[in-house]
Image 1 (cartoon, rainbow, N blue to C red):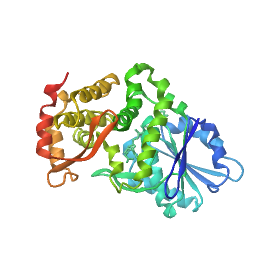
Image 2 (cartoon, helix red, strand yellow):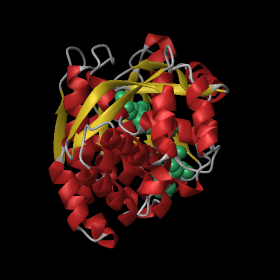
Image 3 (spheres, protein in one colour):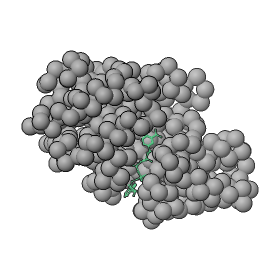
Image 4 (cartoon, protein in one colour):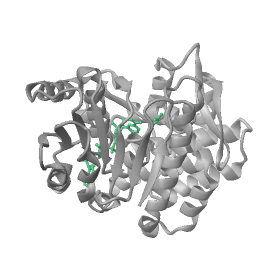
Length: 359
Ligand code: NAD
Ligand code: GLY
């Protein structure tokens, strides 16, 4: 059990790692208003809803529960509207609380509702996926998707605290564990040779025993970045986007073929290849990243990817300014250079070669 403090100019908060779910009520008994709205999804609520509810409920505390369909499709303004309407219909006030119990979809959605209801009420995040424990629940980005793109409506809104019980990962499907591992590999490449080495030397089937350490180290890395650039104003937070420029293009252009973490995995392989070809890192770094993704059964090989679809997306992406793309590129394991601007035509030329260099 550890308490990691995220130090911010306003609204610092604790991330409680490895705490038992049935003890969460101890932190909510005092303060946080009379009403707690628990937002969860149809997979998570039957597993953990009662434990959280029983822990919080008690003298003077009223619980409201909203259960939404599982998955990205629920992350809409429509669902946010339903949550907000419920808050109002239950006469929730400024001191009351929205508690999210679930993965990144639920914390993004519930955090957004907490940020906007009465211009901001308490928000407590209880992440139950590996991805949400190492990334989505930390750092205050909340929001919903629009039909034309992901996360286009949102707000920076920090939780009052984050509380995670590692035991919730025992029910998480293996495919979802992999999505979180992709983000942990990302932290290794951008900032931590220690994380990368540990992943490298642990047989993947035994990695679960190292998850508490890997989660805590990942949170500490994200904490360090968020503390220096909470609202993405000075460019430092950009380092968290390693693998995401290309990953995003793969995710969108290959519609639902890859989960988010898998797209980021391919993005990390492709961007490290670009880095090698641009002379920013050695071939050994590219091969180390690729081997890591392969070992953890994440996609790394572009031979089955329709490259033209990615290129079309890159050419017309609004983020491509004046025909240029911006990357965070690996210089070594544990060190990246952000803000690297490359002409789209050059990116395409380099990536056309990538399948020939597989192996
Ligand atoms: P998710 O919330 O959809 O959860 C994945 C699946 O796992 C769902 O089907 C869910 O029902 C199920 N699940 C969750 N916990 C479970 C458990 N303990 N046992 C069994 N099943 C469980 O997705 P995710 O991967 O957690 O998060 C992805 C979302 O996070 C995306 O919308 C992404 O945009 C967002 N995100 C946000 C940030 C941020 O900084 N705010 C960062 C990264 C990702
Ligand atoms: N997941 C990227 C960020 O929080 O900035």
